[in-house]
Image (cartoon, rainbow, N blue to C red):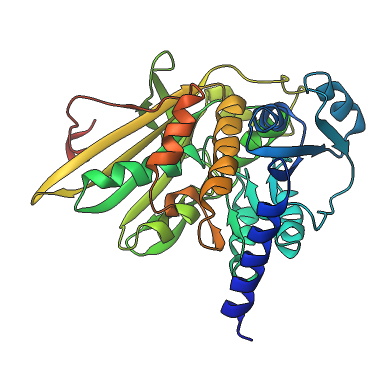
Length: 357
């Protein structure tokens, strides 16, 4: 039996088990932090989900979060994925998600991850062949950024005949783990896609004033160790430039090489994301700027939970990829907007970068 045949058989077996299981699908959520706890509540409230189990490596955090869950949510432990699991959502700190996703794939369970770290994104994408063999989809980076930004890029692409530039940026952090990753990213090498090859640039370089939806408005953004290009480039063959930036203050840049001096806040304030697409339409240059504003932890949870429910309803082709590779983003975007994370479009005109000051 070939890998394709084995994958098809595993997928059909999983679908048959899901159809015969009373009360909807079985979901396991890993991570009970600012993002994970929200994901649990959203999934538990869905009639399409039969059972939700949540696990976390910190028993205290898990117990504290449990007070916000209803009685149907089960508290679990460990990183193994039961064979009866239909869907896994991973909202643990960056650097810990690949192992859980690998266990999910081996259990023939669909998986949604929320990573925003370069090495881990590569590790997750490397599970593509294994996911195909087991007949399951593995969504990489279904958070605020990457995640919503990938989805907006795919939706905005419908306005173009061809796209040659994609530039994404973000403001804000979610929970403490997200804040620590933000701190590390600013002092690490950034990865860009330029003219058909990968380039490395110092974190904290390349200042650019980016405008986000109100009330965030304009922020100075810089390069950082962000994985977005790894997810966007495969989804847009022929694209010439893909960059990712993050907002930072002068103090952020000065202290980035040092350990964090103080404990991060339980959750950051209002954040935002921005996606700028440049290309051709009707033989002329065309620019589209899309964005959204929300608390980053809330935005990431909405995207991850909506993606999980989308997998339940549609069951896409197996393999590992980001949301930019989704065939039709409209249905998922509607689910995201229904949870009060409403994308918006900049209406106006854009000056050429050649004339920008």
